[in-house]
Amino acid sequence: MKRNLVTQLLLWKESSPRKPLLLDGARQVGKSHLIEVEFGKAFFNKTHKFDFRENPRLKEIFKESLLPKKILRSLELEIGQKIDPQQDLIFFDEIGECQEAVDSLKYFAEKCSDFFICASGSNIGLLNSFPVGKTYNLELFPMSFYEFLLASENQLLIEEYEAQSTLKKTHEKLWEFFLHYYFVGGMPEAVSAWFQGDHLIDKIKNVSKIHADLFVGYSRDFGKFGGKINALHIESVFKQIPIRLQETHDDSVKRFQFKNIIENKSRYIDLRGPIDWLEKSKLISKNHIITSAPSIPLGANIKENIFKLFFFDVGLMCHSLGLTYQDIQNQEFSFKGFIAENFVQNELRAKGIYPIYSWQEGDAEIEFLLKIKNGEIIPLEVKSGKRTKAKSLKVYVEKYNPTIALKLVGSVGAGDKNKYVWPLYYAGFADQL
Image 1 (tube, rainbow, N blue to C red):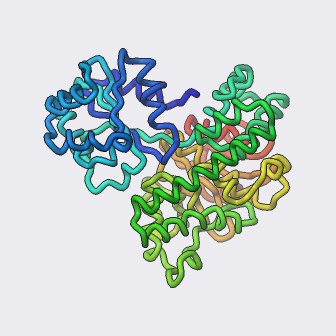
Image 2: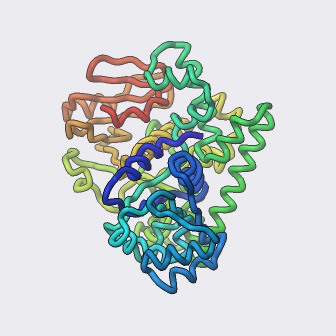
Image 3: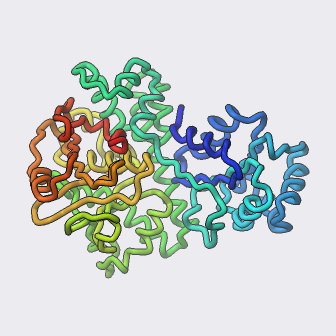
């Protein structure tokens, strides 16, 4: 399965001087496979992987010394072969298990900038200390809709998507894949099971089992990295996010409410710890709500305790709500809007857009605000159905007069030069405006 982040990995490979690369991302989004297989095997003579979770003995090497050449010699002795750090890729997997290994990246950056050092982990955002300014940082998210299409190996449809085709037949096929994506999501194991399976019933069962197992794994991580008491609070918030989104039955997700999640805790300050933990672990993301006239920088317009929360993978979110494959295909449930909004949030994140902002004023709500290439702030409205009328978008346009307005809908789309109406599955092109 092809991942778009390979392009940025190649840019890092060609950079000089070269800082160690640090790849962050939630558990099981494909970090190890991306570095070891798609990048390492394809673009290096050899890839030497050192997994700190699989081999705890590696920690002793870094406790003995943080000097790169001494570390390199000890690693060679560990695996019984020579390493050419200027030709081979050295990969520290699950580096968050060893704080000393994290600290060593500073010295690799300062003393050995010609080495090819990659590191990844699922708890990087939770580390006690971090070599600020000494690493080349990238984030990997669940597979986007485009990557989902790439995994299908349907070349004709991929070409139509890349061209942003508006053919009715293209829309029929892409919408079919889009609803499949709602069920499967972007976790690589689930995507692989979906496209490798032969019978629909078996594929549905396999994907559902993978989703269930992933939730068990995340619950274990809460206990391992969050502590026993805090783990209960983290899990409560994690489970409540899809439920809170589901309670929104209108066209737009409302701000996250802090009441009735944890007993005797009803304010942002009470839940800030669990929310921050989940965000740092890449399992949720915020959408900051602006309630005044948007201005640059957008971050100056927000209040810390007013935001929406979204799930990091739409397939896992639908699974947590008990939505079946048939439910999603029929699109007859009453909260399609929040799934569409969560999908767009994740597509923007996969494009490296974060923080993410929305706008609310009175009864008018714009799901997303985007800063486009010319520096202008434009509105992005999300409609899950085929209706293209959007009162809130009209209010925003009349009030702030943006040169471009974008609306994502459940149809093939339309629009003139400055008012675009795109089908939802083209959300990943929004960064090109």
